[in-house]
Image (cartoon, helix red, strand yellow):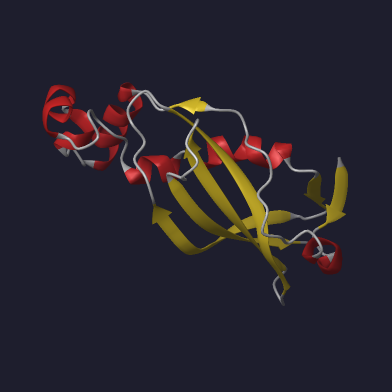
Length: 159
């Protein structure tokens, strides 16, 4: 795997593109995970946690994961997408979560579905505090063309 230093801005900018890398390993989003997330957040909306009612009344035919649960699983599913990339960023002392510019929930994640992610390098900028890198990550239900979630993550690589 090719290694690119975090401060080699030109080499990183050459990797910016419209094409997503390959998908990482899938992860099943179980009803147990959904219920645990509801307990953690206090969001017990029936469409997520009442299986029988969701089967009867939900437009999705059953319970679906909270959008923010799908987002919270991003580190788990995007790790595989990062590992599948053809290069690795190296040389940094630390990496700081700098924020995001975009979050969209585009389609539901049914209970029991498997999700996987793929990513693309969207922007690279040199700054006073380090190198600012924006990645766009798409989480899909396995087999679905339409993403369940699109997220633009901004990280700051510091030396």
